[in-house]
Length: 146
Image (tube, rainbow, N blue to C red; front, side, top):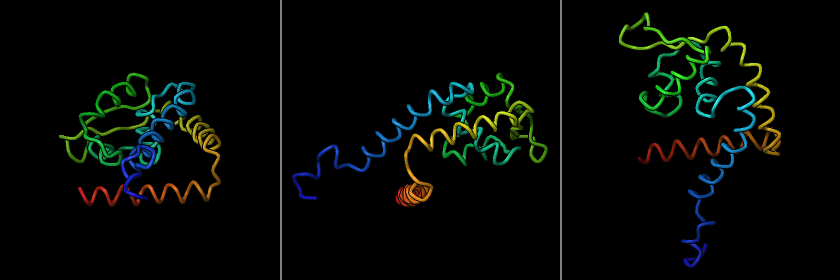
């Protein structure tokens, strides 16, 4: 890349990632509306479907967020009857998150969303895996640099 191209928007990795993230959220929106979740709720549910019974702090760490920003998301999931929040028996100072029967059952619909999104990407399984690994490595390097 020559110096003249260095400052072009379409030559910026940050913009490519940012605009792709926006496009991903937009593609997920109608799929998630069908199952009654927003994108942040879906991410939280993905983690809880993977490992039920996490504390709010553990969930926040998995999602690279702070606990406070998750509170409204978790309150909505609880009001929808998908999770319950209670004191963690290991440490009463922490809130533990448990999937309800309805929350566990929603996983089947979540799998359909996942498959529909994968089809929308138009990538092979191998291409998807390679891209995910590259982006994860980039995230780790940037986190280390910060």
